[in-house]
Length: 341
Image 1 (cartoon, rainbow, N blue to C red):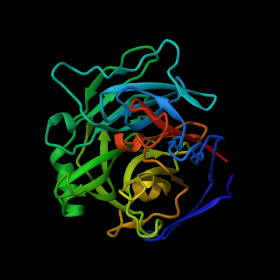
Image 2: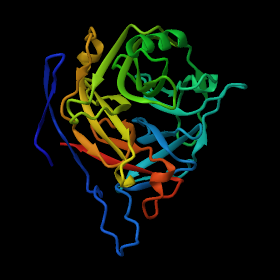
Image 3: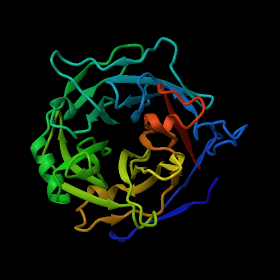
Image 4: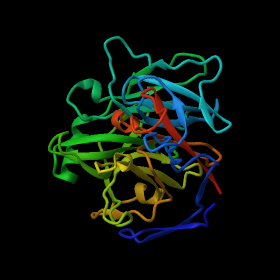
């Protein structure tokens, strides 16, 4: 276990002392191959899905389930965390969100729980097709299908705010969170660019009012930066969730590179940000994130926060990366659990 961690948000002049987290006893390093030609084991434990690239996660305290979405389908994956594993509970099955006739969703990337107990899920907004530009609301009951309904939002205002902040027309959303009152919603942008072919990693947050069943136009754009903390590396936001105590937000970033050794191509980090920074008046300049709480050897994209403060991180590793490890099937994902001190 580590000592307490001091995080400094330089542009805002905020200093916050935070309790660090310690991982449970699960593998975090690759075992040595048994033979020169053998593939190493994946860097984290596997869990089973279907067409599986886990892209979002949330915890349901009423049932104790870890809910997961994949960017390859509209399935709501349901898991029980026991004995260091994520397994499908008895009486459950992974089943698609049930949508109204004629409504489709594609590339789900963010998932968060409202104070009411309902959930919101967001797609990537990275293509003009309406199915990629959805925010939906659903409830979860163990053993039952989940009906999802669209939540109205101002798509044009969202796009205009991102373009004004980045100067670029294309963007991709990968994170979704709400404050402790459920009256402010945050859309986390991971990439901007001229098109999907030339993405630029960013940590950009749009804060919007959430009034009942409708999302208002953005009232703030918050720009954060990993370059100071990561020796010049700009990682992109991949998830955002309110901490268990409601005093800070936990933020995942990820990186997808192409070094000579492809096993090092996926990485990411966990940061913690005071809630007051995201809920107050935004800085005009990007705010430098402090030292990360954790680094990862795969691509983290989903974060479920349990009431105890335990964190479940799921990884969205792509097809070619999975081929580099023994037993890492296309129907598998990876996860790790970080326990509070």
